[in-house]
Image 1: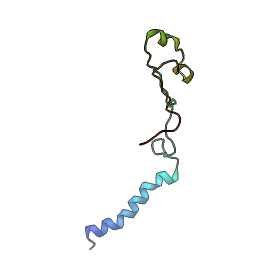
Image 2: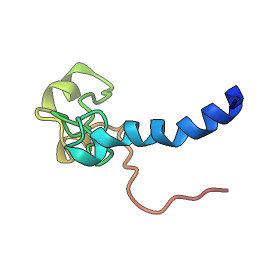
Image 3: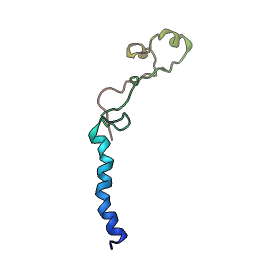
Image 4: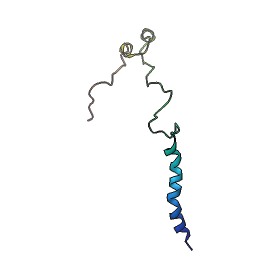
Length: 84
């Protein structure tokens, strides 16, 4: 008579094969697909600009880089960085 451990080691490969059947046989569900990184996502963007006064804030219409430079607090992160 087989011991319990021998039975488990015999059944283990079959259990793994049964778990893999839905993945191999059909399409992946959206939460199982590693290629899918997001659905209905907007591109990241900043919508706020710090201004020293209301007059400057009113002069900035659509928030894009051309408008952000009107604020004296704007600093671009583009370019070379120093890490020391």
